[in-house]
Image (tube, rainbow, N blue to C red; front, side):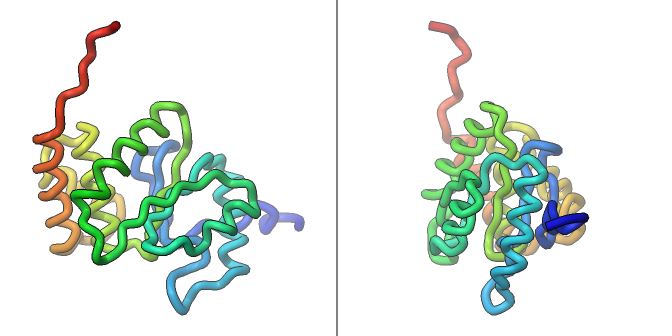
Length: 176
């Protein structure tokens, strides 16, 4: 492969959440019936060429994971399907994201498509780790990042994360 195609193509709805550290996009290759393996391959090439060290799939199923293996791209699967309870999934996801980012990884997070639920997951993460302390403020920031308004599903998810974040123990900063 030569020229501009050697580095692949940018995934649809690619958005930086934390510049050069954490980004989100639609599932590489597209979602459901629109999924195309050739496009998936091109998008994974782009992900690699941009220096991403980990892809995190929130898909309910293990679709696409073999494609990351084929391209020797580290991946993690944290299923967050439509019937999964976010309160049981998100704290673990957020702790993993914090650890990966702290260790210098460049992470790409994806769901089937960029929708209210994924926007809520992102906004919840910004609240969870203290980057943005208020729900309304983080929703406004995420809406600006994605260029669209967040619907009720995403807003409810942010509200649930705020409750979880308040009840989590404060990490100790003492050495030893």
